[in-house]
Amino acid sequence: MNGLLDLDKIRADFPILDRRLSGDRPLVYLDSANTSQKPQSVIDTISEHYALHNANVARAAHQLGEEATAAYEGARDKVAAFVNAPSRDGVIFTKNASEALNLVANVLTWAGDPYGIGPGDEVVITEMEHHSNIVPWQLACERRGATLRWFGITDEGRLDLSNIDDLITERTKVVAVTWVSNALGTINPVAEITRRAHEVGALVVVDASQSVPQMPVDLTALAADFVAFTGHKLCGPTGIGVLVAEPELLNQLPPFLGGGEMIEIVRMEGSTYAEAPHRFEAGTPPIAGAVGLGAAIDYLSGIGMDAVAAHEHAITGYALERLQSVEGVRILGPTENVDRGGAISFELGDIHPHDVGQVLDSYGIAVRGGHHCARPVHARFGVTASNRASFYLYTKPEEIDSLVEGLDAVKAYFARGL
Amino acid sequence: MDVDALYQEIILDHYRNPRHKGLREPYEAQVHHVNPTCGDEVTLRVHVADGKVADVSYDSLGCSISQASASVLTELLIGKDLDAAMAVHNEFLALMQSKGQATPDEDVLEDAVAFAGVSKYPARIKCALLSWMAWKDATAQALVNGAQS
Image 1 (tube, rainbow over the protein chains, first blue to last red):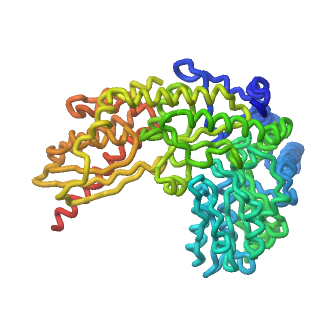
Image 2 (image 1 turned 180 degrees about the vertical axis):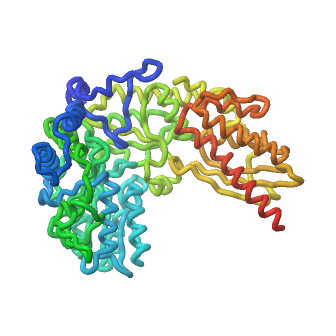
Image 3 (image 1 turned 90 degrees about the horizontal axis):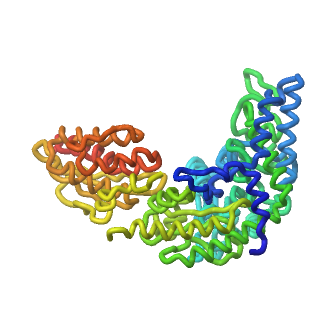
């Protein structure tokens, strides 16, 4: 199979992949779009941070405080370089991608002209968004009397852009779209959508949670106004997310959370605020999380995101082919390995995804079952839930074989006694 | 984990051959409950007469555990005095919250003892409880509605 990484070498970096589950079965982890596993270097870096350098940041004039601040701000530099952000000062640490998206939706709810959402404005999203990129916009529209509109999905599982001129108009204030669908795996033409949105003066928000971990990205070239992603899907720890935007834009927007670090001067009568990024980082930030994310970025950069993307593409192609050979499997989303990320949602006959997942789990195979926080996608395809197998740089072709064997076992199990 | 301990034959039997399924008249209350993590849904009606659970009818979408649980519920509760039915409900709830430590009382729970294994799987407890929570909610509403009419 072309494009695979040196799997023995890569897998040796991830201690959890050696785990034996009950019944002494090896772990077959096919849930990386949910959260990725962590290499030893990330685990060690976090541990070392707490063991040797722990202090609060930017408010402790002592050696440890300086070390912790340097590590935290160093992580910001690493993130900026990794995604080619327009400016390191436009890299804001949040607790996850959901918080980053909520930050944007809230400050655009509160902002006045020219950026704020107002009565009669339209916000355009898509039917394939994760709930994190739907609900904040529903709330914003309700609060400001704006209208929410959305792109539909084709039968193949691609964005239906046929009515783009009807959807993105002079009334459009914000276009919020996912780069890679967490449920369908579809890679969307976000650069094209960004260009169209900018032509009408709309702000563009991109949910890059499933793209930054899987492929090389250049956010300066993309030119979207706000890009959100999370650390734990790219080999980093939980509790650290990222919002990337131009500092000039960020500094014109009202703060999100108030507290320490985000201020300039606080008087009892009123306060002034710091500039980005600290303007949007109230309180003690997830310091160890940022440091761990920096280590994850070092790890992935060492392998090379082109190589990670090639591996993911190869595994996804193999999985698409093998899954389609299983009688009763119906894939939700593109079945052609073109513009497609490494997450495959599927149904297995009329066996409920919980039951499929439970029997697979008894073989040590971890997949997700449910609506994957993308209920409208499932409604679009007339189902309430599905199973999702998702891959990463450590996924072996043999694990896809295990999944296929597991699905045969599921069918045999639920057919029993029929 | 031994998946057979979860999917007892009784559960698979109720899943394949659900008892008392379908929505029926008369009823004093109808509720709709969902399991937000997986989208399982149940619409459940309760008919209370002379202090008894005269009928429980339902329509549901969901996994084998949630479907079988609704079926077992109707077999256990239809025809019982309300107090006795609530006692069965409480016993089933306690079993589900037992983390696999409880020895279920077969005299009270009958076929529902098959769900004992579910209590070891935190992700599935909600599936087993979905219709029981719906029944409790509907019964409370039925008593209010019945008192008003």
